[in-house]
Image (tube, rainbow, N blue to C red; front, side, top):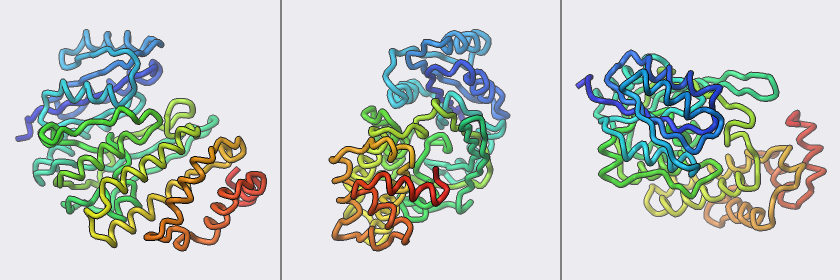
Length: 330
């Protein structure tokens, strides 16, 4: 059982300063029955050449080159070529703990899980400062198949990433699950996990911290607050509603939907507000979510959040800027 092949998929785009560390962390796994599939997404900074050097030295590494088409397309190509029973996704500027595959495959086999979520550490690099955080999941036991869309899951961001999980390849392929290539400004991981949830996967969680994710300014899409980024947040709320309304327990759906809306509003940054990047269409969509007749999201906001939201939708950006400053969010 433990000698099942595991595919590690690494999409690469212009990461010459970090890709070596990522590949090394995959090569140095304590569990050696692995294949490493590197999909170079039109890199122009020398990343491709670095990957080729590693491939020449290690027969477990294969490389695919594509013209720049985005991380979703790169991961889909990796999935098409995966020969393993399980798959792990590794971002090009992150690293895996040496025991990641060994511990997660042991857990997956023991629980016969389709998705095995492990805990991770996150390091933010912003303006020459670093901040260290650890995300440990709320249970270490086998869970129901709706875990990735429950209120507790939304609260704990269990559905947000794909690099914090070991997936059973057969589960993905037999259900024709893939990454939505329309998402260009983030959100593809969330939609992928929600798509998995539709097919009632067996899911388990681990408290072992097995992955290090780096948020680098100007490197990670999650740190780039553009109009497209906020519109993507709206698309995710629409996707959740379309996918799960009427299919989940009503109380559970309402709680999860409300929390998703609040999280979307919570991403409003002082910088983006000051730059007035929001469109009228975006404002209309936000109001629709917050004042939906069936959910009463506004009533569930705290006082600070109500003030912030009210100033935002009224277009009182200067007042909101002052409000952020007073709260220390500048």
